[in-house]
Length: 112
Image 1: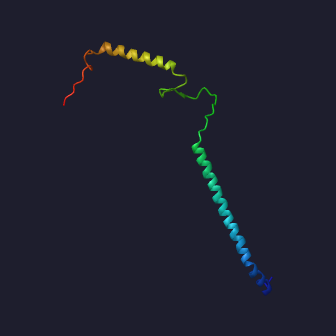
Image 2: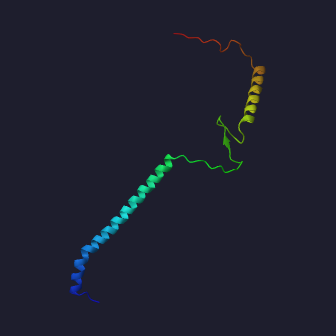
C-alpha cells in the first residue's frame, strides 16, 4: 500500500504532537524512577535511624551474654560461683608451690 502525498501532509502536521507525547512519556518514566529512588532512600534512612525491638524467639538454645561479656545460658550466678572457686583453687596452688615475699609489691621507688 503506497503512501499518498495528502497522507504525508497530515503526518507532518501531526509530527510535533507525536514528538511531544513521546517526550512526555520518556520524562514521565525518568520522573517516576527519580521519585521511587527518593522514596527508597527515605525508607532506608528511616530504618537506619530507628531502633528495632528484638523479637523473642522463645528458644532456650539462644545464647545470652551476661554483664561480664561471657556467653551462657543462665544469668551468670553459677558462673560467678565457679569463677570464685577457680580463683581460690589457683591461689591455693600458687601459695603452696611458690614462695611469696611479703614486702614484694608494697614499695614504689621514684627516681628523678
